Length: 164
Image (cartoon, rainbow, N blue to C red; front, side, top):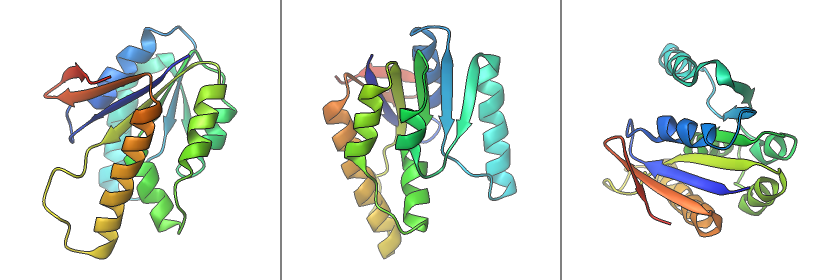
C-alpha cells in the first residue's frame, strides 16, 4: 500500500503516468474522477480521459467528498484525478479541504492511492482574490500530500522525474 503523488503542468502526462503506475499494482483498478461535466469543453475532456484509460478501471465519480469515496473503495490501486479539480469544487461549494481525513482514508483503504495534481504556483500572481486563494490552497494541499506520500513524481513533457 502506497500513497503516490503525480504533479506537473497542464498536459504534461500526469494522468497517463498515474494510470500506468496503477496498472503495476494489480488487476483490480479504480479511477476516482473529480471533474464535473458542466460545459461542452469539459465533457470532451472527460470523454478523452475515459478513452485513454480504457476498460481496465472501475470509474467512481465524486467531485467533493473524495475521502469517503476512497474509504469505501477496495482496489489494488485507485487513481484520484485530480486534486486541483477537487479543490476547485470545494471552493465553489464553500468548503475547505480536509487533508488529514483524505490521507487517513488513503492509508486505510488497503491499496495504492495515486493522486494526480496540477502545479499552479509557477506562473504570475492571479489577478483576483478567488484565483489567488485557489493557488494558495492548491500549493498547501500539494505540500501536505507530498509530505505523506511514499512516492512523488514531477511530470515534464511526458517524462516522469521521481522527486521522492
